[in-house]
Amino acid sequence: MPGVSSAELLERARAALQGSDAEKAYALAGELCTMESENYQHQQLAGVAALFAERGDEAFTHFSHALRLVRLPPLAAAAWAGIGRARLLREELDEAEAAFRRALSLAPELPPALGGLAVALSRQGQYAEAAQIGKHALELGARDASLHVAVGQALLGQDEVDEAEEFFRKAETLEDANAEARFALGTIAKVRGRLDDALAIYREVLEKYPQFPGYGQFAALKTFTAQDEDIALMESALAGLTSEAPARARSDLHFALAKAWDEAGDAARAAEHLGAGNRLERERIGWDPSSSETTMRRIEKLFPREFIHRYENAGFVGIAPIFITSLPRSGTTLMEQMLASHSQITGGGELAHFARVANTLSLNWGQREDFPDIDPTTAFEDLRESGHEYARLTSRLRLLTPHFTDKSLLNIHYIGLIRMMLPAAKIIHMRRHPLATAFGIWRQRFTRSLGYSFDLEHIVRHYRAYTALMQHWRSAVPEAFCEVFYEALVADPEGELRRTFDYLGLEFEPACLEFYNLDRPVRTASLGQVRQPLDRRGLERHRHYGEVLAPVAEGLAEEIADYEQALHAALKKDGRPWSPAAG
View 1: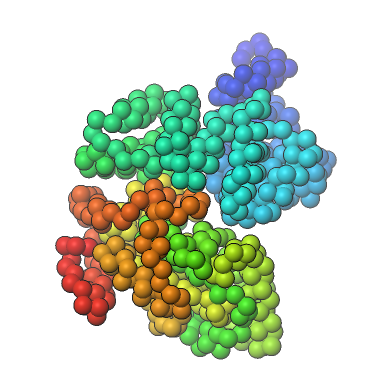
View 2: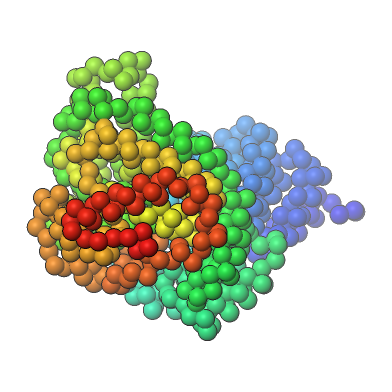
């Protein structure tokens, strides 16, 4: 602004932030940075304003610039904490955690860094540490509502629902209480199975804060009709968003409307919204489809049959967890809910513990020049120690029952290592028709960690890599796991469950067929489905999108043929008919 001093601009930018006008604050701070680009204070302010405006890339740039301008540890710590927040906004959780830890190495009790670390750890499933660190930040005087919500989410991840609710309710009373705090109470109602209450709270929040990205969670809890007033509510909210609205808010609405129009019987409109939502996420996140392909090929090379069998009885035998694995939308949540209805099994959900232990072991072995020809004594000790650590991390899940489930999506990577580290473990691989799986992934708004999900070509490539890895496990350790076809489970739940329990070495219990009555927290995208009896309609949903899915059908033609043949053979073996039209 001509004739306006930097001091006046600084005051106006701060006032705009206090008045919750983040875009104005960012514009003013940007002018400050243009006037005095080497001013730490201006770069930090611009970074903060960018965070409030949900501009993760710009925030990262400003905080990184600020970091280069300082040497004093407290100022550098503040810049690192800002970088961590920007990484969180970009859903780069590992990098966010590293940035917050760097900040804390310079200022060990910096509340923003402690609070940010709690959020990063909670989103990675490291709930116990997240809750501990978040509570410590509150003890040091942090009072913001978002931190209370983060601690509540970490507690919720440990199924401490009552205590989580206390933190959410406290967040609502604070001066900076926002949509997130109120929405969290809807989540409490949701995980407790009070879906009508959850819907009411979600609707209240979204009507008051139309830019809050909660429409996907709202839509997941209900079934829509063509005359549903909530469709008009969401279409109006989408029309009211400007091009400057965060891409996450717009994509959230597109995915929610896609579900709504699909259930209302308008597949064409649903496809339009899916295309728009996925395009926004793809542009926002970016994804290298070769990354997952490279990872899975590397796993095959690192875990050949000979290596696994050399150490298959080396690990910790004191526990017998039940790992459930597959791609998303393949029936893993349904299977877990059924198993968790058994008197001897506790549902653990999507645990991050095995990945944490496996990464530690991988770093240890990767530093050894003799890998994979490790000294057997050392390998046995490492595997037993790692298995024991996993047992320690999951000890609370065995307080009431001898068995528990672990349905992390990463489990497909670890079948060989599970066999080595936890010899008594059982593994269930859920299989579903490739087209149904691909469509289920594409229609669900996942996080950055599943970045392949926003592009049909990327889904095809990921599916092929997954198929190749599972074929490797079938060849290397066929005895290590049991496979269940989703279509067979829906068609004959008792028969499939009896077969599964035979594999687990447990007696079948009729309560497992009434899984929808089980009172346990469920937090995955399939929450609404597992609260209801089995419904076959979901098997056919992808058939309404033949034109959209044509590239997938072509790209996965071989995988589809192999799958249908395998399903047919499995059902024929049990004397049950099947035809491709039923898939």
